Image (tube, rainbow, N blue to C red; front, side, top):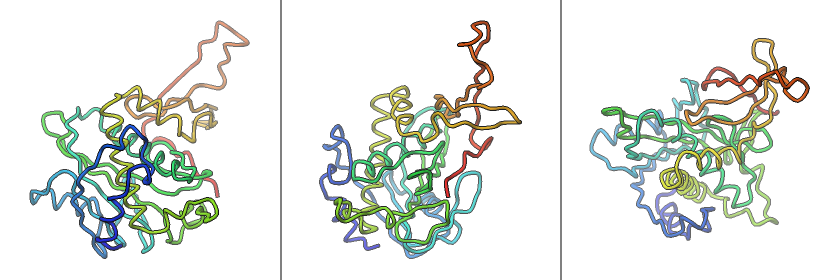
Length: 278
């Protein structure tokens, strides 16, 4: 990862970074910090913010030795992957914090898909291709007076690093004959991801929660997935404004018995694992 090459990648037309046309005129300023190794890029950004760094502060590490995923899980971060965190100052109600993750996941998935990589989102915070994990997002916030004053969105993307059987990397997906080699450097992938995160955030801020949920669910790999919860079969319907998973009871069938009401319920992140393909 080279800072000068990254700066050049960020100067490309947003169209070439997978951004939808509505945001082609947006040319953000990112305050870039590239390091060889850090414990966690999220932690590194928070440290910079505590020293007075502005929104747009970005830390990219060639590797992490204490990377974090959701619910405190360790994120393996060997060289060859992209490990990046971005600071935002959204000033939105704290109750909407989950939508920052949904927006970021949709924005990056959309940018990569526009560049030929068929990325979907796996609820709530993963990027997947054919059911295998390409990347993940971790959002952390600082709340003041019930408002999100600052947010740090961290993302890891498998590029040329080794991955487990349930994972997949860009290196495995890119096919030169299909023109996808625009993603053949970490610097370009970083530029795509930064613009993708910002794209999702701006879409959410401009279009609102309902539009974001519709957009997110259009890329949600889990819609229609059958799951078993406490021995009972349910089907994934989508995501609620609070970021929870909405499921319906498959054992209630109003088509055969109009008197039966379809049971629905919400699952909070961490209540169930939806799994990956291997």
